[in-house]
Image (cartoon, rainbow, N blue to C red; front, side):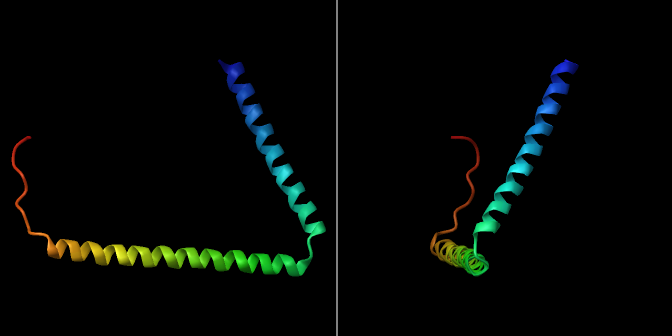
Length: 85
């Protein structure tokens, strides 16, 4: 049991370490070959897309709330059912 736990812990540690190392390596390679202006424009574009998505989601929620209020106002109020089917 302890051997399995030891090897699982070692495997997790090595996997995490390799993932971090690989991520740093990829970022360094991308930074080396990428012009600074392109990075700035790309970052700004991604931020704008994120803002657009957030705004669209908020507009959708507001429309959903409004429609739900309309439906509740239009539907007759019924008493809750008592008993089973």
